[in-house]
Length: 192
Image (cartoon, rainbow, N blue to C red):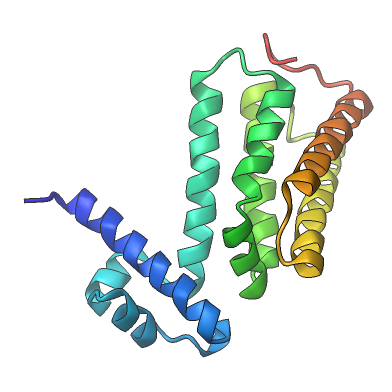
């Protein structure tokens, strides 16, 4: 018999898959919890045990992707700055998830999650002083621009091609190098 953690993980996957299928057919604002649980084949109690709202289905998936990146960073103490940003873009540019978040009108929450994650990474990985207003302004400006680019590509092109993803990745790496120079903030240890 499966334990509760396994059951909850499976339930989350069924609910996410159901929402994706429904969003292919119906506008996000017209999708109800009843429609989601029916499509997923789960109970309302199973739904509410895992999600507080319909928005949380998408936003929790995004946070899980970023959590995987956090684990990579925490275990790989020799990760280079370029490798980190490449993994960051890969975690962010999940075309389907990003498209769904934009389609659902959750770009403000997307920005907030990314700003919080980036601040934590700059603090933990680079030991930046995020209490310094100048550093906060620069990091938040940087993240706003990056999310703006992601949203622009999704709205204009419906997806991000491999070529566009590589261009975006290189642009983000270059702009983050410029940010490092602006703040005169060194990266910690081997992270260069």
